[in-house]
Length: 153
Length: 89
Image 1: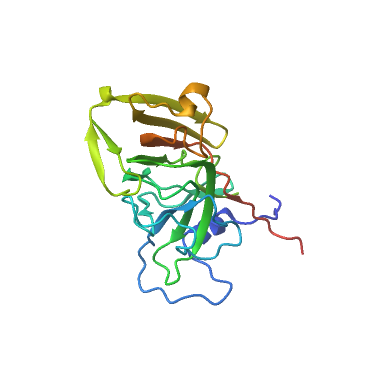
Image 2 (image 1 turned 120 degrees about the horizontal axis):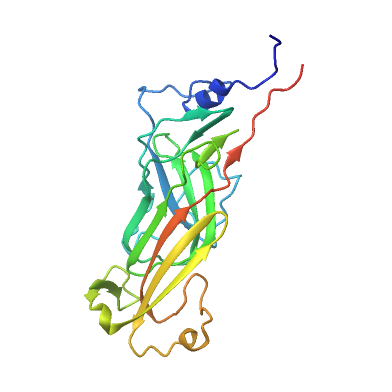
């Protein structure tokens, strides 16, 4: 059997589980999984690939039943792999009830609330929307190698 | 009964109203990345231009005179994918 060059799939999964550190890292106080949150941002904000940490700049105001910082995503399913792709998806919808948004918003930031600096994970955008005395629900994609929220292919 | 906001200057003050007293509009936004089901209510007799023209008045809001707007979003496939490759030596 010949050898084949590859990025090990187990390594990709390990990245999602924080098992590798090529640079200076942090001392983790526990082996428990981190808490991740989703926060909503105004269409006027400038989140993107260069976003490094969560900040209230550009976030919906803390009014109309919106709490700055966003909502905790349910994380009952550990990262896994299929084929050569490692992936992870929150295990429940994110929802804001009785919400009146302070403006038109078009982005959600997923960030690590456990990290001391609230490290950013990903920015998700959609058509600008506003909510009035209603509910904004984001149902998560299917947790598989093709559709999961976070995929390392 | 449906939750409504009657004073936009007071976003935390929500009250309940009988749906029959409101004008309901539903919309769907569907693309490769997400599916949004939008439900919006206005006061009966709302003469907002949007209801006459069918053209939304504001960004992300059909009628500026609405008192309720909810969205149930189904995320299909958010474009977050990191490629990974081991370099040749």
